[in-house]
Image 1 (tube, rainbow, N blue to C red):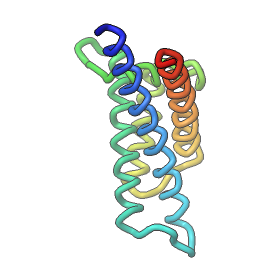
Image 2: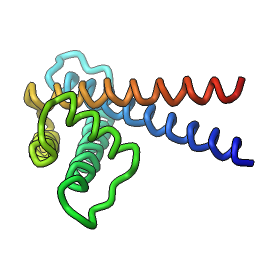
Image 3: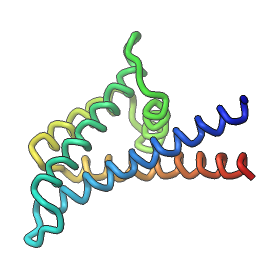
Length: 143
């Protein structure tokens, strides 16, 4: 029974990671679409993708705050992303919190600075790496 539970958790984490990568990619694409003359997706899809990106950044900010403040809980996957982001960006948890808040605000205005785009790209890359490791672990536990 324990083996099935482990596989379920690995599978659940892998799916969560894929969702994070998808949200980042969709948000970045929506931002590109805002400035494009040739729209591939509708205004509603653009807005929805940006709102999902904004929500992800809010969750990321809360996870970064959980490193600073006691009593703030964060999803374990987002906590892991924060850990890796802190190392990758070489910033403190409070600096990451500020970056995430700035990015949230920008997305709320349907815009993004180079720093926000870079944050989303880095977040996506880290989520891909974590997800890849989970998938390899799941695959090897199945075979």
